[in-house]
Image (cartoon, rainbow, N blue to C red):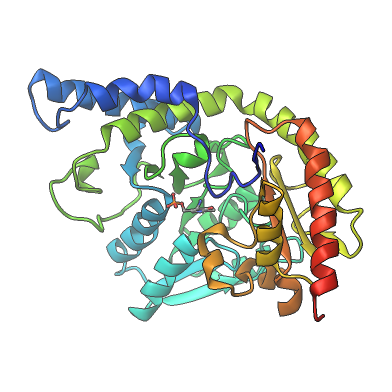
Length: 383
Ligand code: PMP
Protein backbone atom coordinates (compact mmCIF):
# COMPACT_ATOMS: atom_id res chain seq x y z
CA UNK A 1 0.00 0.00 0.00
CA UNK A 2 1.26 3.46 -0.91
CA UNK A 3 2.60 5.56 1.96
CA UNK A 4 1.12 9.02 2.46
CA UNK A 5 4.08 11.04 3.68
CA UNK A 6 3.08 14.15 5.65
CA UNK A 7 6.20 14.99 7.65
CA UNK A 8 8.26 17.26 5.41
CA UNK A 9 9.44 19.37 8.38
CA UNK A 10 11.45 16.32 9.49
CA UNK A 11 12.81 15.32 6.10
CA UNK A 12 12.10 15.99 2.44
CA UNK A 13 12.84 13.56 -0.38
CA UNK A 14 15.67 14.61 -2.68
CA UNK A 15 14.13 16.38 -5.70
CA UNK A 16 14.95 14.41 -8.86
CA UNK A 17 15.94 17.65 -10.64
CA UNK A 18 18.44 18.33 -7.86
CA UNK A 19 19.83 14.81 -8.14
CA UNK A 20 20.12 15.11 -11.94
CA UNK A 21 22.00 18.40 -11.54
CA UNK A 22 24.26 17.19 -8.72
CA UNK A 23 25.10 13.73 -10.05
CA UNK A 24 28.22 14.89 -11.89
CA UNK A 25 29.62 16.25 -8.61
CA UNK A 26 29.33 12.79 -7.07
CA UNK A 27 30.64 10.92 -10.07
CA UNK A 28 33.24 13.21 -11.69
CA UNK A 29 34.17 16.24 -9.62
CA UNK A 30 36.41 14.84 -6.91
CA UNK A 31 39.00 17.62 -6.66
CA UNK A 32 39.72 19.56 -3.50
CA UNK A 33 38.39 23.11 -4.03
CA UNK A 34 41.54 24.48 -2.36
CA UNK A 35 43.79 22.87 -5.01
CA UNK A 36 44.99 25.27 -7.70
CA UNK A 37 44.98 22.86 -10.67
CA UNK A 38 41.95 22.49 -12.92
CA UNK A 39 40.29 19.58 -11.06
CA UNK A 40 40.31 21.68 -7.90
CA UNK A 41 39.10 24.77 -9.71
CA UNK A 42 36.17 22.81 -11.11
CA UNK A 43 35.09 21.97 -7.57
CA UNK A 44 35.62 25.58 -6.46
CA UNK A 45 33.50 26.84 -9.36
CA UNK A 46 30.67 24.50 -8.31
CA UNK A 47 30.76 25.93 -4.77
CA UNK A 48 30.81 29.55 -5.94
CA UNK A 49 27.91 28.96 -8.30
CA UNK A 50 25.91 27.40 -5.44
CA UNK A 51 26.79 30.37 -3.24
CA UNK A 52 25.26 32.71 -5.83
CA UNK A 53 22.09 30.64 -6.01
CA UNK A 54 21.64 30.58 -2.21
CA UNK A 55 22.35 34.33 -2.03
CA UNK A 56 19.70 34.89 -4.73
CA UNK A 57 17.22 32.72 -2.84
CA UNK A 58 17.22 35.07 0.18
CA UNK A 59 18.20 38.27 -1.69
CA UNK A 60 21.53 38.58 0.13
CA UNK A 61 23.74 41.60 -0.67
CA UNK A 62 26.31 39.36 -2.33
CA UNK A 63 27.36 35.73 -2.51
CA UNK A 64 30.24 36.31 -0.07
CA UNK A 65 27.69 36.61 2.73
CA UNK A 66 26.85 32.87 2.42
CA UNK A 67 28.86 30.29 4.42
CA UNK A 68 28.18 26.59 3.78
CA UNK A 69 27.87 24.32 6.81
CA UNK A 70 26.67 20.82 7.67
CA UNK A 71 23.11 21.97 8.34
CA UNK A 72 20.97 24.46 10.18
CA UNK A 73 22.20 23.23 13.57
CA UNK A 74 25.77 24.13 12.72
CA UNK A 75 24.67 27.40 11.12
CA UNK A 76 22.83 28.47 14.27
CA UNK A 77 25.73 27.38 16.49
CA UNK A 78 28.11 29.48 14.39
CA UNK A 79 25.72 32.44 14.36
CA UNK A 80 25.03 32.46 18.10
CA UNK A 81 28.30 31.28 19.61
CA UNK A 82 30.41 32.96 16.93
CA UNK A 83 28.91 36.42 17.53
CA UNK A 84 28.65 36.02 21.32
CA UNK A 85 32.30 34.99 21.69
CA UNK A 86 33.58 37.62 19.27
CA UNK A 87 31.66 40.50 20.90
CA UNK A 88 32.02 39.57 24.57
CA UNK A 89 33.76 42.84 25.38
CA UNK A 90 30.50 44.68 24.54
CA UNK A 91 28.37 42.63 26.92
CA UNK A 92 27.35 39.13 27.83
CA UNK A 93 23.62 38.99 27.24
CA UNK A 94 21.70 36.89 24.71
CA UNK A 95 17.98 36.70 23.96
CA UNK A 96 15.74 34.07 22.34
CA UNK A 97 12.04 33.40 21.95
CA UNK A 98 10.48 30.65 24.07
CA UNK A 99 9.72 28.51 21.01
CA UNK A 100 13.13 28.32 19.36
CA UNK A 101 14.24 25.01 17.90
CA UNK A 102 16.57 23.00 20.10
CA UNK A 103 19.44 23.76 17.69
CA UNK A 104 19.16 27.41 18.80
CA UNK A 105 18.05 26.82 22.36
CA UNK A 106 20.91 24.50 23.30
CA UNK A 107 23.80 26.71 22.09
CA UNK A 108 22.15 29.54 24.03
CA UNK A 109 22.04 27.30 27.13
CA UNK A 110 25.72 26.45 26.65
CA UNK A 111 26.58 30.15 26.63
CA UNK A 112 24.49 30.59 29.76
CA UNK A 113 26.63 27.94 31.49
CA UNK A 114 29.68 29.96 30.47
CA UNK A 115 28.32 33.04 32.24
CA UNK A 116 26.12 34.75 29.63
CA UNK A 117 22.74 36.06 30.79
CA UNK A 118 20.01 34.36 28.73
CA UNK A 119 16.58 35.98 28.50
CA UNK A 120 13.70 33.98 27.05
CA UNK A 121 10.88 36.01 25.52
CA UNK A 122 7.38 34.56 26.01
CA UNK A 123 4.91 34.00 23.18
CA UNK A 124 1.12 34.33 23.09
CA UNK A 125 -1.43 31.57 22.60
CA UNK A 126 -0.74 31.54 18.84
CA UNK A 127 3.04 31.50 19.25
CA UNK A 128 3.68 35.14 18.38
CA UNK A 129 6.54 36.66 20.32
CA UNK A 130 5.63 39.33 22.89
CA UNK A 131 7.13 42.47 21.35
CA UNK A 132 6.87 44.53 24.54
CA UNK A 133 8.78 41.89 26.49
CA UNK A 134 11.37 41.82 23.71
CA UNK A 135 11.76 45.59 23.88
CA UNK A 136 12.29 45.35 27.65
CA UNK A 137 14.73 42.44 27.40
CA UNK A 138 17.22 43.79 24.88
CA UNK A 139 19.81 46.11 26.37
CA UNK A 140 23.06 47.68 25.14
CA UNK A 141 24.80 44.64 26.66
CA UNK A 142 22.85 42.18 24.48
CA UNK A 143 24.88 40.74 21.64
CA UNK A 144 22.46 38.58 19.70
CA UNK A 145 18.70 37.95 19.66
CA UNK A 146 17.35 34.83 17.98
CA UNK A 147 13.78 34.43 16.74
CA UNK A 148 12.77 31.81 14.21
CA UNK A 149 11.03 32.93 10.99
CA UNK A 150 8.24 30.42 11.51
CA UNK A 151 7.81 27.58 13.95
CA UNK A 152 8.14 23.96 12.81
CA UNK A 153 5.65 22.57 15.36
CA UNK A 154 2.79 25.08 15.16
CA UNK A 155 3.45 26.81 11.82
CA UNK A 156 3.10 30.35 13.16
CA UNK A 157 4.99 33.02 11.19
CA UNK A 158 6.65 35.76 13.27
CA UNK A 159 6.46 39.50 12.47
CA UNK A 160 10.14 39.44 11.49
CA UNK A 161 10.38 43.07 10.32
CA UNK A 162 8.89 44.45 13.54
CA UNK A 163 11.22 42.28 15.61
CA UNK A 164 14.16 43.44 13.53
CA UNK A 165 13.28 47.11 14.13
CA UNK A 166 13.18 46.62 17.90
CA UNK A 167 16.44 44.68 17.96
CA UNK A 168 18.26 47.10 15.65
CA UNK A 169 17.12 50.18 17.56
CA UNK A 170 19.33 48.83 20.34
CA UNK A 171 22.17 47.97 17.97
CA UNK A 172 21.97 44.20 18.43
CA UNK A 173 22.48 41.37 15.98
CA UNK A 174 19.33 39.60 14.83
CA UNK A 175 19.63 35.87 14.07
CA UNK A 176 16.77 34.01 12.38
CA UNK A 177 16.38 30.24 12.03
CA UNK A 178 14.58 29.99 8.69
CA UNK A 179 14.61 26.20 8.45
CA UNK A 180 10.84 25.77 8.72
CA UNK A 181 9.92 28.78 6.58
CA UNK A 182 12.43 28.54 3.75
CA UNK A 183 10.92 27.46 0.45
CA UNK A 184 7.39 28.15 1.66
CA UNK A 185 7.27 31.94 2.07
CA UNK A 186 9.56 34.53 0.48
CA UNK A 187 12.58 35.51 2.56
CA UNK A 188 14.44 38.72 1.84
CA UNK A 189 17.23 39.26 4.37
CA UNK A 190 17.67 42.89 3.31
CA UNK A 191 14.08 44.08 3.53
CA UNK A 192 13.39 41.81 6.53
CA UNK A 193 16.37 43.34 8.38
CA UNK A 194 18.15 40.09 9.21
CA UNK A 195 21.84 39.90 10.22
CA UNK A 196 22.27 36.12 10.41
CA UNK A 197 20.02 33.47 8.85
CA UNK A 198 20.23 29.67 9.18
CA UNK A 199 19.14 27.44 6.30
CA UNK A 200 19.02 23.70 5.77
CA UNK A 201 19.42 22.09 2.35
CA UNK A 202 17.03 19.21 3.03
CA UNK A 203 14.13 21.56 3.84
CA UNK A 204 14.52 22.73 0.20
CA UNK A 205 14.51 19.15 -1.17
CA UNK A 206 18.30 19.11 -1.31
CA UNK A 207 20.46 16.43 0.34
CA UNK A 208 20.65 16.04 4.10
CA UNK A 209 23.70 17.14 6.07
CA UNK A 210 24.23 20.45 4.27
CA UNK A 211 23.21 23.95 5.27
CA UNK A 212 24.14 27.58 5.00
CA UNK A 213 24.51 30.62 7.20
CA UNK A 214 23.90 34.10 5.81
CA UNK A 215 26.10 36.68 7.52
CA UNK A 216 25.31 40.31 6.71
CA UNK A 217 28.42 42.17 5.57
CA UNK A 218 30.01 43.89 8.57
CA UNK A 219 28.72 41.50 11.25
CA UNK A 220 31.56 40.67 13.65
CA UNK A 221 31.77 36.91 14.13
CA UNK A 222 34.47 34.36 14.90
CA UNK A 223 34.84 30.75 13.90
CA UNK A 224 33.79 27.95 16.21
CA UNK A 225 35.62 25.40 14.04
CA UNK A 226 39.24 26.40 13.46
CA UNK A 227 41.30 24.47 10.91
CA UNK A 228 42.27 24.95 7.28
CA UNK A 229 40.44 28.25 6.94
CA UNK A 230 37.83 27.29 4.33
CA UNK A 231 34.65 29.36 4.00
CA UNK A 232 36.35 32.71 4.77
CA UNK A 233 38.00 31.17 7.79
CA UNK A 234 34.61 30.72 9.45
CA UNK A 235 34.04 27.02 8.77
CA UNK A 236 37.13 24.94 8.29
CA UNK A 237 37.10 21.52 6.66
CA UNK A 238 37.11 20.30 3.06
CA UNK A 239 33.81 21.25 1.49
CA UNK A 240 31.02 18.79 0.65
CA UNK A 241 31.00 19.51 -3.09
CA UNK A 242 27.97 17.42 -4.05
CA UNK A 243 25.98 18.63 -1.05
CA UNK A 244 26.76 22.28 -1.66
CA UNK A 245 26.18 22.17 -5.43
CA UNK A 246 22.89 20.34 -4.86
CA UNK A 247 21.79 22.77 -2.16
CA UNK A 248 22.38 25.66 -4.56
CA UNK A 249 20.21 24.03 -7.21
CA UNK A 250 17.56 23.13 -4.61
CA UNK A 251 17.43 26.79 -3.52
CA UNK A 252 17.11 27.96 -7.13
CA UNK A 253 14.24 25.54 -7.78
CA UNK A 254 12.57 26.38 -4.46
CA UNK A 255 12.44 30.05 -5.41
CA UNK A 256 11.17 29.30 -8.91
CA UNK A 257 8.49 26.84 -7.71
CA UNK A 258 7.45 28.60 -4.50
CA UNK A 259 4.14 29.98 -5.74
CA UNK A 260 3.17 26.72 -7.47
CA UNK A 261 4.06 24.70 -4.34
CA UNK A 262 2.15 27.16 -2.15
CA UNK A 263 -1.03 26.83 -4.21
CA UNK A 264 -0.83 23.03 -4.04
CA UNK A 265 -0.18 23.09 -0.28
CA UNK A 266 -2.93 25.58 0.57
CA UNK A 267 -5.69 23.56 -1.12
CA UNK A 268 -4.69 20.36 0.67
CA UNK A 269 -3.94 22.03 4.00
CA UNK A 270 -7.28 23.83 4.23
CA UNK A 271 -9.23 20.67 3.34
CA UNK A 272 -7.27 18.69 5.93
CA UNK A 273 -7.93 21.29 8.62
CA UNK A 274 -11.65 21.34 7.81
CA UNK A 275 -11.87 17.54 7.92
CA UNK A 276 -9.75 16.94 11.01
CA UNK A 277 -11.38 19.65 13.13
CA UNK A 278 -14.67 17.74 12.78
CA UNK A 279 -13.19 15.21 15.24
CA UNK A 280 -14.61 15.83 18.71
CA UNK A 281 -12.30 17.74 21.11
CA UNK A 282 -9.73 18.52 18.44
CA UNK A 283 -8.04 21.91 18.18
CA UNK A 284 -5.77 23.66 15.70
CA UNK A 285 -2.47 24.73 17.28
CA UNK A 286 -0.66 27.85 16.08
CA UNK A 287 -2.12 30.82 14.27
CA UNK A 288 -5.13 30.11 11.99
CA UNK A 289 -4.03 32.61 9.31
CA UNK A 290 -0.44 33.73 9.91
CA UNK A 291 0.87 30.22 9.43
CA UNK A 292 3.01 28.39 6.88
CA UNK A 293 1.02 27.29 3.81
CA UNK A 294 2.11 23.64 4.10
CA UNK A 295 1.55 23.34 7.84
CA UNK A 296 -1.44 21.93 9.76
CA UNK A 297 -1.02 21.14 13.45
CA UNK A 298 -3.57 19.88 15.96
CA UNK A 299 -4.05 18.59 19.43
CA UNK A 300 -6.56 16.02 20.58
CA UNK A 301 -7.78 15.88 24.16
CA UNK A 302 -7.16 12.74 26.23
CA UNK A 303 -4.71 10.94 23.91
CA UNK A 304 -0.93 10.73 23.40
CA UNK A 305 0.99 12.04 20.39
CA UNK A 306 3.29 9.00 20.14
CA UNK A 307 0.30 6.67 20.01
CA UNK A 308 -1.28 8.86 17.31
CA UNK A 309 1.93 8.66 15.27
CA UNK A 310 2.17 4.86 15.58
CA UNK A 311 -1.50 4.30 14.84
CA UNK A 312 -1.37 6.57 11.78
CA UNK A 313 1.67 4.61 10.59
CA UNK A 314 -0.48 1.46 10.64
CA UNK A 315 -2.68 3.23 8.09
CA UNK A 316 0.53 3.95 6.10
CA UNK A 317 0.30 7.64 6.89
CA UNK A 318 3.37 9.33 8.32
CA UNK A 319 2.91 12.36 10.53
CA UNK A 320 4.87 13.94 13.41
CA UNK A 321 4.12 14.75 17.00
CA UNK A 322 5.84 17.55 18.90
CA UNK A 323 9.28 18.21 17.52
CA UNK A 324 10.53 15.49 15.19
CA UNK A 325 14.08 16.15 16.27
CA UNK A 326 13.40 15.37 19.93
CA UNK A 327 10.32 13.17 19.87
CA UNK A 328 12.34 10.27 21.32
CA UNK A 329 12.30 12.03 24.68
CA UNK A 330 8.54 11.54 25.25
CA UNK A 331 8.55 14.85 27.11
CA UNK A 332 5.74 17.33 26.53
CA UNK A 333 6.60 19.70 23.71
CA UNK A 334 8.38 22.84 24.96
CA UNK A 335 6.64 24.82 22.20
CA UNK A 336 3.15 23.70 23.20
CA UNK A 337 3.85 24.47 26.85
CA UNK A 338 5.14 27.92 25.81
CA UNK A 339 1.85 28.74 24.03
CA UNK A 340 0.09 28.10 27.32
CA UNK A 341 -1.12 24.50 27.07
CA UNK A 342 -1.18 22.33 30.18
CA UNK A 343 1.12 19.28 30.27
CA UNK A 344 -1.70 16.85 29.55
CA UNK A 345 -2.89 19.01 26.62
CA UNK A 346 0.61 19.34 25.17
CA UNK A 347 1.00 15.56 24.91
CA UNK A 348 -1.70 14.88 22.31
CA UNK A 349 -0.30 16.76 19.33
CA UNK A 350 -0.13 15.93 15.64
CA UNK A 351 1.88 17.88 13.09
CA UNK A 352 1.30 17.60 9.34
CA UNK A 353 3.73 19.26 6.95
CA UNK A 354 2.93 18.92 3.26
CA UNK A 355 5.30 18.67 0.35
CA UNK A 356 5.60 18.71 -3.43
CA UNK A 357 4.39 15.13 -3.87
CA UNK A 358 1.17 15.47 -1.86
CA UNK A 359 -2.14 15.53 -3.73
CA UNK A 360 -5.77 16.31 -2.86
CA UNK A 361 -6.72 12.61 -3.15
CA UNK A 362 -4.69 12.02 0.02
CA UNK A 363 -6.95 14.22 2.14
CA UNK A 364 -9.91 11.81 2.52
CA UNK A 365 -7.86 8.75 3.62
CA UNK A 366 -5.87 10.93 6.02
CA UNK A 367 -8.98 12.41 7.66
CA UNK A 368 -10.49 8.93 7.90
CA UNK A 369 -7.34 7.55 9.54
CA UNK A 370 -7.28 10.42 12.05
CA UNK A 371 -10.94 9.76 12.96
CA UNK A 372 -10.28 6.04 13.45
CA UNK A 373 -7.06 6.67 15.36
CA UNK A 374 -8.61 9.15 17.77
CA UNK A 375 -11.68 6.95 18.38
CA UNK A 376 -9.52 3.86 19.00
CA UNK A 377 -7.06 5.62 21.32
CA UNK A 378 -9.80 7.31 23.30
CA UNK A 379 -11.44 3.96 23.91
CA UNK A 380 -8.15 2.66 25.35
CA UNK A 381 -7.30 5.87 27.21
CA UNK A 382 -7.46 5.86 31.02
CA UNK A 383 -8.19 9.61 30.76
N1 PMP B 1 15.55 24.51 12.87
C1 PMP B 1 14.35 23.98 12.62
C2 PMP B 1 13.13 24.84 12.72
C3 PMP B 1 14.23 22.62 12.27
O1 PMP B 1 13.01 22.09 12.05
C4 PMP B 1 15.41 21.84 12.18
C5 PMP B 1 15.32 20.35 11.85
N2 PMP B 1 14.69 20.11 10.64
C6 PMP B 1 16.64 22.45 12.45
C7 PMP B 1 16.67 23.77 12.79
C8 PMP B 1 17.93 21.66 12.39
O2 PMP B 1 18.28 21.37 11.10
P1 PMP B 1 19.47 20.33 10.79
O3 PMP B 1 19.03 19.03 11.35
O4 PMP B 1 19.60 20.39 9.30
O5 PMP B 1 20.69 20.82 11.44
